[in-house]
Length: 357
Image (cartoon, rainbow, N blue to C red; front, side, top):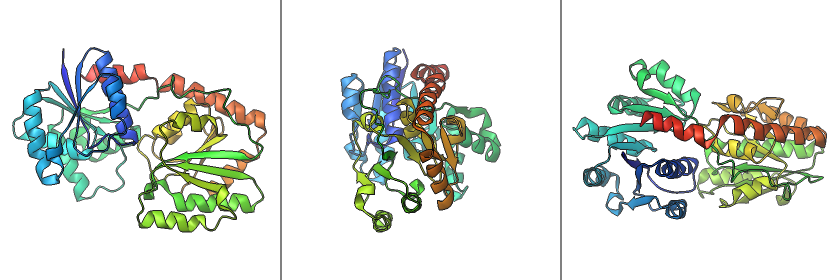
């Protein structure tokens, strides 16, 4: 039985953290011995690991960047994993460095976002990846980028897209909202890639054009300058009721089921978990045409794509959806669920990892 050590910076509420903790549970169910190791004390998903009896290890001695190499080296030496599976850039670089120094374990590093600029930092990361056995990208877009720009790594690159827990994220026909005024849900931290100020401008344009639209945005408010920019933009709306910011929800599946449509206005993405979760709950979707999004959804079939750099194009896509009859919107939601069931199952996801292991 192989012993797997899963490395990540923290167990916070993000998409990578969700995918890794779910992967750890699935690996345990397949008979592997698994431990999840982290060193920043954000523990949103720790109860999930505990409920499923997956071991975890918090390394308080790795709280500073300078101490992490030595803390992880000590823990890996003690745990003696057959495979180290890393889901964050910092842990991947440390694991690569340990391999370069002679550590004996197989290493799978994971690419969870898309490279926007091949700067010195990115080039250094890809240089260290030569010590990994596999580089798993969760998007075809990033996998192709690595192969194109780092041909020496091409044999190591594998694309394993994220999965959706379709038993948890499923339509709730008792809750599904069919409001006379459309309720839109968005999920993501208030960070620059999420394109929130431009999205607020698009919503404002839609409302000024005479449509009734209410937006619920769920995600972390980091309280930084970008967050202030978002709050300043929200003041342009005729009333604060049109756009409400919520903290992250641990029952986000219920919030999906209480909405009419999902929107992803990001400037760039890796593999957007929230898009697939919303689709799995039977929602039509309005999305930026970036990364793997055009591969995931079907433009004009279960929603509409738009250019995230154009406020007018975003607003136009929203209005196209709002102009549809209710029956057509519901057909789009049914197709969303069908796409997820066909392409993003947990079984396909875990089997792909088992093949690597």
